[in-house]
Each structure stands twice: as structure tokens, then as C-alpha cells.
Length: 361
Ligand code: UD1
Ligand code: UDP
Image (cartoon, rainbow, N blue to C red; front, side, top):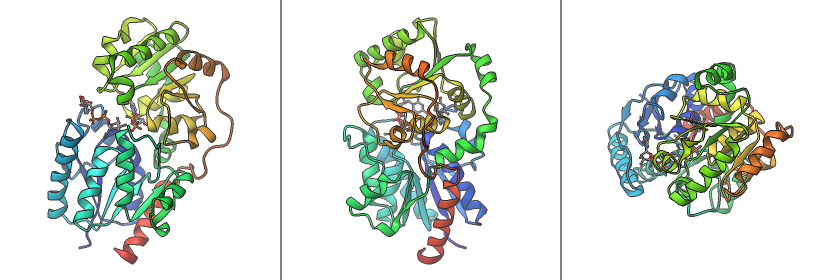
């Protein structure tokens, strides 16, 4: 029997990106395994995505859980080494830039197993972000690199990656969005959460925004300023819950702080929002496709195409309230969208991997 293609998934954004790739590879008759590292383990950060997106149940969950970067990466590496040794993959496929991604890369490389990186070549050039380190290292270890935007190709080539392994394929996160558009029910989610017709969605989970109580407090004040004019719904990531609540997040009646939402509910809300304030990577892309104004509370982004070909703008905490309120008045983005964000990234990746395995695997 042919060695399987093994997908390593660990955290919420991985699940959204993997669904169309796994589906496309299955349609082409490939044998696949799914290894969940267990980096995210709450039902609302993990299981709900498998159910809503029709992902296959993981063959194994390594139960890595939370911890420091070293603890989490080391636990994932130990579990993955054993799994890859017991079930040798023909190819390992990893997604994005989380700790589980780089852990899989290091293990695969040392076991001489080829690897494909979905969402390769994104760069924020901000080495204070753990994700930037994870991206760079993962790309160095990958034989196949699937890029979501053209500038990634230049970055990868400049870092010495072989050009024949780099493929511009579009964006699998957008595949998932387009495939599920008919399932987003904005009115139903609004009714369930008691939201008026016009509202703003906010998400905050970057360490630089939610770990420091003073910074978090500045953001909460800005959200209160917005909520004085238009209701704000914020599905709160567990990372920032305690600090944001301690800063008084829920104290304003116009703030709807809710637990993390399932994909369909969350995207239903985003689609109907007057504007979105975020520090998420994926949300910058999803708002681009939906043409919903997006204000990103970060000094940089690894996704500049969402600014040049989308609704995204980088802002500081001090600008947050005025920028969001202005964006609500400005209305939807009407310009060009990024090339190849057409819902076909999964099938493109599927074909390239299948051909590569037949030739080089
Ligand atoms: C991780 C990724 C980040 C990604 C985010 C998506 C890394 C370095 N970071 O950040 O790039 O944007 O996921 O959401 O890989 N927790 C729970 N339940 C869970 C998981 C986590 O309560 O199921 C809490 C724990 O207190 C944990 C904290 O959240 O310590 C942070 O979790 P962790 O996986 O370390 O990083 P994220 O901030 O989720
Ligand atoms: N998401 C969701 N429910 C939420 C928040 C986010 O379903 O309450 C989805 C959404 O599709 C988003 C993805 O999860 O793009 C990844 O989210 P996150 O912001 O956690 O990760 P990042 O993209 O910043 O790594």
C-alpha cells in the first residue's frame, strides 16, 4: 500500500485551511491521515470546525495542549516523531504558522520525509511575532510551497528556496468561505445574540494586544467608544479572556462579549457587519473577500495583499475608535480582489501534490 499523505493540524486556522485540500486530495484518490496535535482542544476552537467543515475525524490526537512555546513545540515534536515512525508518510502537509506547523516541519525533515507547506512565503518581517519564526523555519524545510499571494514567491526565492517547488495557488481559506456562503445565516446569529441590524465585529488574540493589561485596557476603552455609537460583538479567544474582562470589556451595554463562535456563526456575523476590528490573520482575508471594511490593530501584516486588493487597513489602538466609526460610514470595499482567490486553491494543490507524488514521491 502507498504511504499516506499525512496532514498535521493543531489550531483553529489550520482546520479552515485544510478542509478544501483534504477534500481535493480525496477526490483524486489519495490515501490520507489526519494528525491533530491537540494544540487547540476546546470544543469551540476545535471539534466544531471538524463537524461544520466536514473534516475527517483525526486518526490520532496527540493531546499536546497549552504551555510555553518550548513545551508546546517539544510535546508536538515528540508525539509526531512517534506517529511518523509508526505510520511513515509519503508526504507531510502543514498549514500556516502555528507551533504545530513548525514542530511537524522539524520532525519530518529529520526523518527525511518530504513536506508541503500551505500558505508559504507570508512575511510580516516582525520577528517579535512567534508566527514569523514559525513561517520562516517551515518554509526552509518544505519541498513544496503553496503561496496565496504573488509577493510570497519573491520572498521564498530570496531566501534560497528552489523555484520549481513554489506554486501560486490561491487561498484555501477563501475556498472554505466560498463553499459555505449559502450556509451563513446572519439574521439567525443576530437573533441568537440579541444584536441590532447594524453592528461591528471585533476579534483580538495577538499576544502584543491581549497579554499586557495596560495595552488591553486601551483597546477596551476604544471598543467602549465604538459601542457608544454602534453595538460591538466580540467572540473572545480564551487567550485574552481574563485580561480583557479585567479591563472591563463587558461593562458597556453596547458590547456583546461571547465565547468563540463556530465557523458558520462567525462568518455569518462577519458578512453582515458594518465593519470588523481584528488582529487575526484569517479575518483580514475573509473580510477582503466579503468586502467588509477591516481595521487591523497591528503595526504590520504578513498579508499586504488584503490592503492593496482589499478592505484592510493597519491602525493603532489610539486610532481604533475613529477608524472603525469612519469605516462604518464609508461602506463596503469595491476594488479588485487578489488574483486566484476564486475558491479553487484546494483543487490546484490537490493536483500538484498528486502529480508530484507520482513523479518524485
Ligand atoms: C495560536 C497560534 C496563533 C494563532 C491562534 C489562532 C502559535 C504560536 N500561536 O495562538 O498563531 O493565530 O492560535 O487562534 O501557535 N487555550 C484554551 N483552549 C484551547 C486552546 C488554548 O483555553 O483550546 C488558552 C490557553 O490558556 C493557552 C492560550 O489559550 O495558554 C494560548 O493558546 P496557544 O495555543 O498557546 O496559542 P494561541 O494564542 O491560541
Ligand atoms: N473563527 C471562527 N470563530 C471565531 C473566530 C474565528 O470560526 O469566533 C475562524 C475564522 O474563519 C478565522 C479563523 O477562525 O479566520 C482563524 O482565526 P484566528 O483569528 O484564531 O487565527 P489566525 O488567523 O489569526 O491565525
